[in-house]
Length: 195
Image: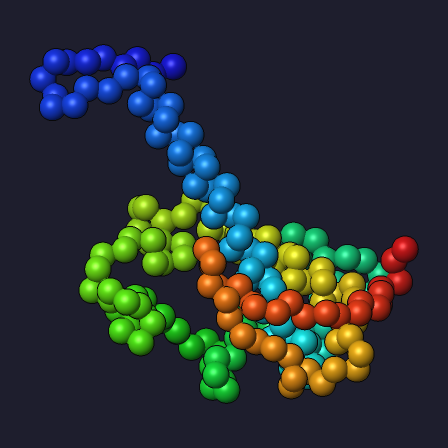
């Protein structure tokens, strides 16, 4: 147990109530951060996969090769996937082994996006960086990869009413995070030999 002692010399003295309030606020921040970011990321990634059926099939093939068709993906399988980790950005293929650096400084100061681009807003980095980075980073990424792998491995997906994947609405809607304005309506078909 931590013992709080007031020295009488500090400009602001604090006690257990202050520490409890800070800890409770931090816990609330972590819980709220985890509630939107992972599901929203999965929604965007899954929508991109639905829009690009060849990439979806390639990912399913990797999942079949690593896991097989007789069981579901487990967390211990995640380190074995290469294609699940890959990404294509705006039609640019990123060669295997490339180092990609996202210029968050430029993104956070783009006057086309932000009304006050030079104003300091410390929460622009999704996971932060340095010693104040998100403690849930690894949990968030593991959850994202595991859920995405399960959805792609366990089901084949088809857009409702025979909609063409190129017609999927990818309009953005900003609330707390950048949601898709219209959710995709899809039909899953179970594809594993596990019941």
